Length: 180
Ligand SMILES: [Zn+2]
Image 1 (cartoon, rainbow, N blue to C red):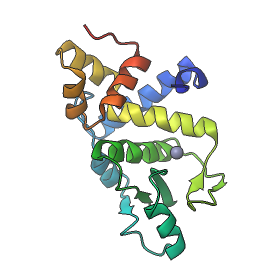
Image 2 (image 1 turned 45 degrees about the vertical axis):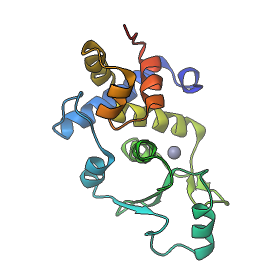
Image 3 (image 1 turned 90 degrees about the horizontal axis):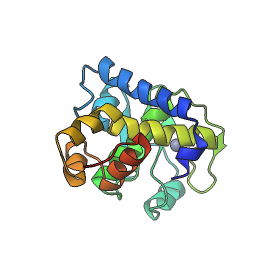
Image 4 (image 1 turned 90 degrees about the vertical axis):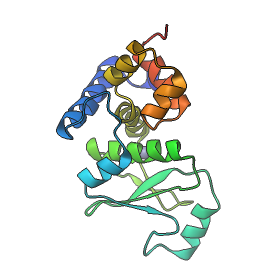
C-alpha cells in the first residue's frame, strides 16, 4: 500500500503511539479488541446509516444508497455525527468508522465537500494518516505482537480484533512483523 511510502517512519510511530495512548485512556490493554462502538461512546458520537441519517437531502441519500463507493463521513462535529455505509461487510464497517474517529483524534479539518456524495473532503496527507491510525486502533502493533506470540493465525487474529483478514495482513506488513 502507498501509505508506507507516503508517511514517514516518524509519523507512523507517532500514530502508533497515539493509538496506544487511546487504549490506555479507555482502560484497555493493547491486546484487547477496541470496537467502534466503544469509541462512539467515548466521543459521544451518533452513528447513522443512510437509512437513519436525519435531515439529508433525498437526492443525496439516493446517491449514497446506490453506491458501494463510499465508506463513511462526518456530517456534524459537535455533537459528532457519523454516517457510514451499512452495505459493507461488518469488519469493513468497523474500519470505516475507525478511520473517521482517527480524523477526529488527529483534529483534521475538512477542506470541502465531495459533489457526488456531499461528504467532507480532506487533504491526502490527512487521509493517509487516518487510514494508518484507523488500522492502529483496530490492531495496535503491540496487540499484533501479542497475537503472533500466541501463534494465532491470520483468521484468528482477524476474529479477535473484529478486523478483516486484509487489515491483519496490512498491519503485519507495515509493522514489520513476521509470522512463524
Ligand atoms: Zn477520511
